[in-house]
Image (cartoon, rainbow, N blue to C red; front, top):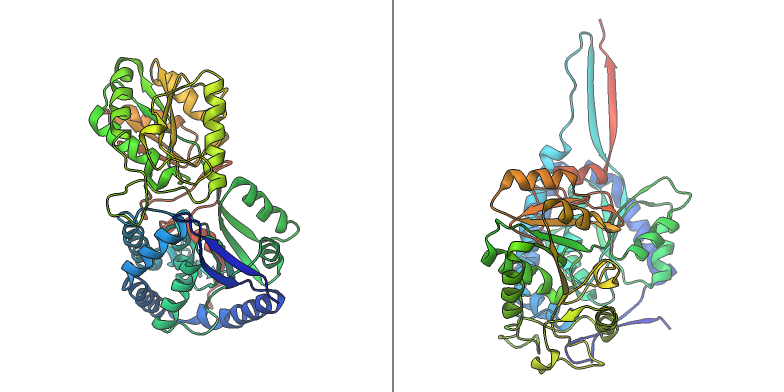
Length: 463
């Protein structure tokens, strides 16, 4: 009897859906179909691939309301915020489809008499995409759509928390008329996921998840000369300079810390504030945090839902308690949030001060609705503290001085530098990380480089 995947909804703790996990036979069928379809799909004209993918995007977003409701039940995001993920999915998908001709165009060096020379971007083959639950459409679209547009076939394995997202992809691709085997999804155990990664027919792996998960992917690929794109964790910082628009900084950073219950790899987890504006910033941040409404995410007025599971909330509770024992001060009383309950995934937002980098809450990824705030003397101290991390995904600066922000940004060890915004992916820009935040790149024309291989043509022309 097949093992069963059970998705436990954080909303009420019930089993929301069940699916049989694929085994060796299902894996073999998927891999054989993907490998068989690869040559034909690669040879399909780019314009035709674009048209089919645009039709698939339209088919998926046509049922956005139902997809958003499923998101709320699967991973707990408030129903008022869930539709935004479908809008983001469509924006990224359309951008990457539109960017394909420029990204995949031949590269021609300067002319050389008697020769014709060019570099072509060639599809890799079968791309295996392993996607997470926290932004299940937005993380998967970064890999699925450009991989297909580039001429690869794709097998998607989604998180056990959000299996219905993979099924929506499959229905949309089928409705659009993609050839058999070009896109497939499969529900797998962790052990079988590693077996799939090791299969010689898999030419590239796109993984989004934890640092530990990225290490497991690397280990599974050991001895094989194929690549992996790894989008891993973050402990993303923000710096509020003395010249910042304070109201805008507070509103943006509080949202950046607590949106999606803080369960974002590029969410704000630590804030450094210039001494002259520190007290005002903290007071305003606390005032705004107290206005959050924690509760049932299916209710229209809720703007802070449960974390994905009780164990995740308990991890955050323990990290916070440890910081308090080390001298941090909590500025939010959880008792003022009626829905906050120990032993449940419902967790009140928290603002901590008197923190330092000896505390895990300022050095280890929290992935929950907690943010630490430190006072700094100026740019030099802020830069040192922002770089004092094993992670390097994004960093945000709040200032009216764009030139100063650019100078600081040049020294930041991070994949993206923001000015006066945070927690956002622009599909026109490369999405990448340094250090333990991962390797490789998605989005923008640069993202196509990792989903293709260059092939050079060097022709001596007949006399």
